Length: 121
Image 1 (cartoon, rainbow, N blue to C red):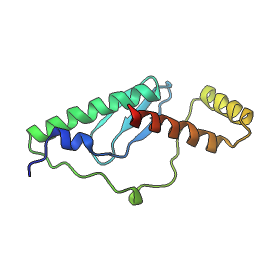
Image 2: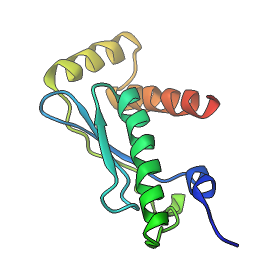
Image 3: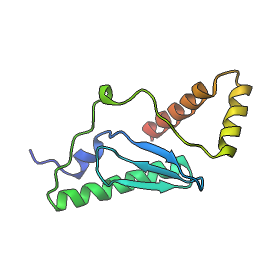
């Protein structure tokens, strides 16, 4: 069975998101070498990342380049280091204190909320 664009876009590839010094967000797909993008917000970076993944996949299919399957969830790390602008760190720290939770737990909540909302679309 020949796999097409629709098949590859249906796969869930792990992504990494990093905050750049200028406050933009850099997104990459570690399983897809050279597939990356950025955005002014995390939401924009995710949208731009999907556009980049689609373009990367189309090019790989046209050039008959091997497209790896996504890593399994078991092979993904359970922690991730992220560099934040000081202003964003301060906002997260203040909000997590208002919610009477750790900043780590609050960030996990925000990220999970975004992932769930994205999967509903």
